[in-house]
Structure formats: structure tokens, C-alpha cells
Picture 1 (cartoon, helix red, strand yellow):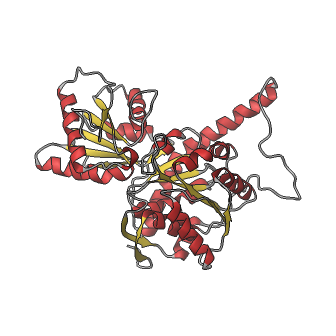
Picture 2: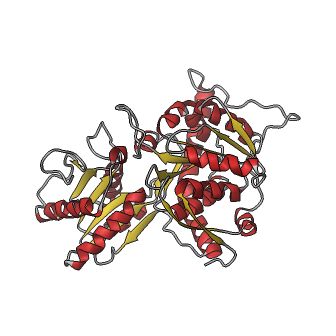
Picture 3: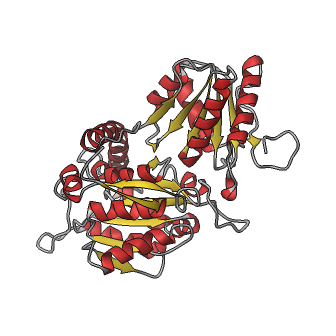
Length: 411
């Protein structure tokens, strides 16, 4: 443990604010929305008291938040914002522009279900809706992991082989308001870990060097279309490079601060497991408890927690899944077009190149802030074991809706 750190008791939103303070951004632009509001309130307090030397921009909405930060980042500023649910939807136009401009921003998504019907509670539908917009997407299980990952996100985003924005996701209600003990590292050691700011080294705005930003490309002009393709190819290369950078940055964090996280996919009690639960975000703790309880009864259950969702760690997930005979994938969001969960889709895609055809079941739960308990995961384990006992069952099956009222569901 880092002896120069100090401990506080705080929720996930405050933990994220502490991380931002330690990362020393130059510009913070915010607009409050439940369940993110207390995060930016804490940041505003840090700035008001002089603990964080940053420009705080309070604008009229989330579209302006990210638009303003794009200009700041283009000028070479380290930036930060946070949003949730409908706020992310309002931010959509500048959100999809940010990775194309190769701007290394960091933004927390305090995950919230989307409407309608009206809902202000936790869920992951917001981030899953934009999962292919070009941002790196990392999910946290605990408040401590929120703090550590937000800091790491700056080093990942600003790496010269990546230069892409990063979303650090933590579940609304469960992590945003859940209180726990959190270690806050020493400022000087964080400064050394992140290094000197060099945010837009490749194309910073300079009055002495006028330039066009986001030029019009494509159409019938062959040269313009080729330039557009080059942008897309470059973004894909940066996203692919991020897998190695994320892994290296997590290793460097463990060396510097003594807290070690699986950078891409966490394997829990998997070496001798027969089946595994696949989870993402704060639900993972309850899944691990359920796996522990199942082992007491002789059922060999493990957990595969997806930490990095974009870029999706295909090889790491396939390696983990190769250790078991069946998977129960639990989502906190819905893929409407496939009638399953988004993580379930990704798992199927990752398994396909390996040629393995094991039972994989889709479970959807925790929507609109509903609990995902150890008892729910026990039912997921039961259903997954049943699928293993009937290998002729379809590979792709309709989802089991956790928390639903229909008879025969784990809720």
C-alpha cells in the first residue's frame, strides 16, 4: 500500500472528483444531471476553494459542454466532463465528433437507464447506445477503481499511439451514491505517473499557424473520399493500439501504487470452473459472492468481468471462456435489434473465431436501478447449468429477464 496516500470515506461520484483533481485538468465543463450531479458539485467545490486550478465552464446544456471542451482540447488543454443518460443523448453530435478529431478527453459516464418510460435510476443503456461512437469505454466495479481508472484514463487517452477520448463508466446509484473507504494517492506521485501535459501535440491551435479543423471530405471527390477513409483507418488503428496501452498503463499503476486491476478481462475463480458468469460494472461483486456460495455446494462456478468494453478485448475474453463449458452473460442494457443484451452479443462474436460452440445464455437485469442480488445470480447459475446439461439447446436463445414479473424468470 502507498504510505503517502490517505483514506477517505466517500461515494463513487466523489471518488471520481478526487481523481480529476489529482489529474490537474485545465478546463472542466459541466451540466448537472442525476445521478451525476454530486460529482460536478464536488469538482466545483475544489475549484472554488483553489484546490484545483482549472477553468470551470457552466454552460446551458450538454451539447455546449462537449463543444466547449473540443475547443479547449484543440488548444492544448487537458479537459474533463461527466454526464448521464439523457445528458449523453443531448451531447451526441459533439460526442461522435470528438474521436474523429482525435481529442484525448476524459469523461465519466455515471450510467443511467434511458427513457421512456421516465427513469432517473441506474442502468447501462446510455453507454451501450453509443458503444460504437469511437470512444474507449472502461467499466468500474468499485469506488476505488473509479478513482484509479479516471487517473489512468488520462495516460491512456494522451498516449501518442492512441489519442482518443475515454469514458470511465460507473453505475448510477450503486457506485455513484454507494459509500466505501477509498485511498487517495499523493499528488506528486500522480504527477509523476501522468507526466507532463502534452494533450494536442499533433495539431494544437495556434494563432500564428492558422488551420482548418474538421474539413469537409468525401462525396464525389475521390481525393476527399480517400481522406475520409484515412480518418476512419487512423481511428481504428488508435482503438486497436489502445488494448496494449490500457494493459501497460494498468501494469504501471500497479507498480506505482500497489493496486492491481485486470486491464481488459478479470478472471475470478476460473481455473477449475465448469461454468462462468460474464458481468460488467458493479454487479460483479454480487456475481462473485454467488460463485463463492455455489462452490460451497460443490458447483464449480467462476466469473469473467469485462473491464474494457471498447475496444472489445476479443482475445482476452476468448482465452477466459476457453476454460469453461458454458456461460451465463448478464447485461444491464438491451440490444433491441437482437432481443438480447449487448455484452452477450460481444461474447458471441469473440467466441466465433475460436470455433467453440458452448452454451451461452443471455440474462437482462438491473434495469432502472433494480437490484441484482446474489440470489439472482444463483438463478443464473442454475439456468446455465441446465443449458450445459442439454447441449443440443440453441446457441442463441431469447433472454431471461431478471426482475421481471413473468413466471419462470429469476426475478
